[in-house]
Length: 335
Ligand code: 13P
Ligand code: SF4
Image (cartoon, rainbow, N blue to C red; front, top):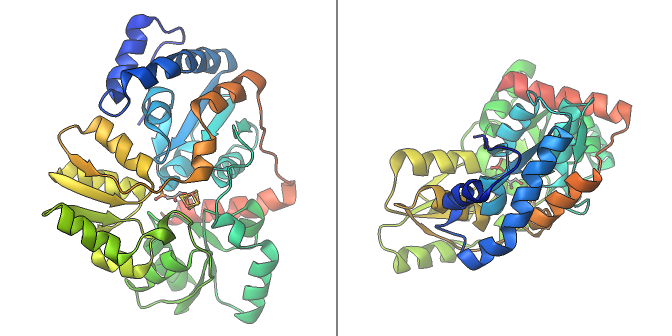
């Protein structure tokens, strides 16, 4: 999805942008946001910049200043085709690194350098080398939620949207019935439940999704009879087992937009529900609210500052970048 509005916004333009989020952003909050929104549009034109935003960004970022939005897979795919000098990544640091890997000649900015990820922080390149030594010949499938150094040690990356496809494709290509799938233990176990390929896992967890429990889902069903429950595959397997379906953030969006359930609960980061609620006022979204603190560091004000000062630029060691790019490109070729 792309946002196209003119660079210098007048009152009518700002009102039109507010229409996109009025269902979830109260007027009093919009009053504090609209100056930053206008400034970001002006700065994007001056800097020949685009803003890429993950589905977990807040609605005023997602709907009002972003040029490209989506799940991790969509952002990686679209980052290949960006026509701009500057890319601002309104997501977290590993996403900005992935955009830099696919756009080595562009300036890639992350508004807040500290926007990490508990999964990315759970594993190092040395850990991957030790896993490979312990399981010689077994391919390493690495979730994109990792550093470039970890991707550089891997055979292929995956996202939650293509993990099953990638695991099966790489196992078939190598003629093996096992893969090392890192670092998200729950994603690996949830994918393992859908295939005969055996998963060698790593004990990394998403700090947002690991907090959901099966009893949360049972409570939701008691409180909202008939609710459709969709769980992200970073949730523990016993939570996914209680849900009606599981998929990446883009797959959840597709479900809501195509099937239009009357009431739905997304067991994931809560801005995702806000963004869907803004665009689908006829669907009632029950919002169990677990926030990703890392995503939230990249606020509207931080994006404005990033464009004003052209900070913080993502740079990568060339040898690490070359090896990591091979893993990301292998994923894009498989999917
Ligand atoms: P997807 O948007 O690819 O489902 O990823 C979820 C996530 O946690 C990103 O950090
Ligand atoms: Fe990482 Fe979880 Fe935040 Fe996604 S939601 S960036 S996996 S901590």
